[in-house]
Image (cartoon, rainbow, N blue to C red; front, side, top):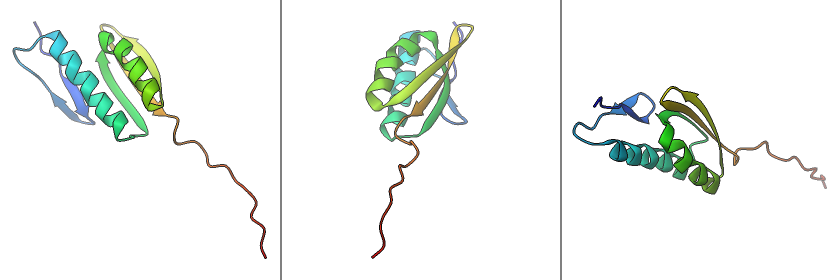
Length: 95
């Protein structure tokens, strides 16, 4: 069984020898949930296809839009926060 490289942060990847796919899935979900919890505005990671369905309700709960692009047995996931919208302008009268 090949070990997967899991990207925790940009350019930081880890492997877990002797662990199964369920453990890897938990690490992927946990890492992305932590990034959403600290309100990282844009998150892009390659994750297992199984992770996408678990990420959808979490992304919605944290106010992120999730776009998943299949790449073989994995998916490129792009999460964008809706919290960083353009500010609304208002007129302030001078006295």
